[in-house]
Image 1 (tube, rainbow, N blue to C red):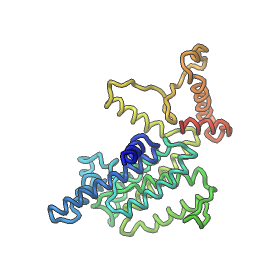
Image 2: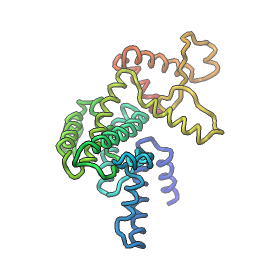
Image 3: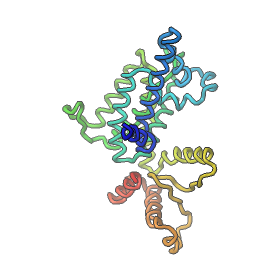
Image 4: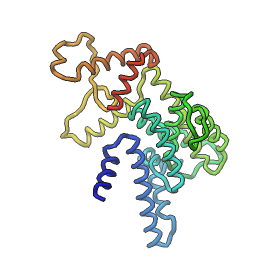
Length: 304
């Protein structure tokens, strides 16, 4: 039993980003469910715990309320109040995330989840304050982030064939297009806010993939923020500097004439130089200009 819990702990805190996202969403759901059960038991108000969770973790449509609870722009995308809502989102996240992580690496997957959640929340906030049929509710769930991952995979590998339920073959782009179509026709339904968030995540995925193909890596900005937060929380630790890519940090050199003695100072200097050359090529000509070998090198770095 101790080995089982040790494995859970290692997966939750040291696993890849997809595994951590799954554990975080499930962990928040379990915690909310336990609190809700005990609150209902001792107060007699069934669902009061869920109401508290929606109020303090869900993203509100009221701008003034959002200002007083700014953390909700992040916490909402990890909060689920219903089992089937969680189950559906985690299934989509797992299967689409496994595909995306294999081809684009785990850092891009995490960036898409976070940016997709932020984009979905923003679209939800704007439209909810314009439409007469929306407003007065809180947004919860990982749908916008998972939608961003699903659509990004379809944009990057549109002709990949998937098998729904292990039987029905369907092109990746057709699956994504079908989900987007269902979201659009459901905008006047009971979960209109959720479908708006899905569309916001899909829009983020489009601009993310287009920017990546032009050599602009959005995941870099996210991890710069993460590194800055780590620096504030762990001031005594060694501060990293440089360009984050994959699971390593590389210092970009602005001087093209590198000192040949650098290779004696670091065993990774050749790898760093190679990375600099590829990044310069992406910036100048775009991602599609890379050779197969160069793309494989980037993929290897993102997985290391």
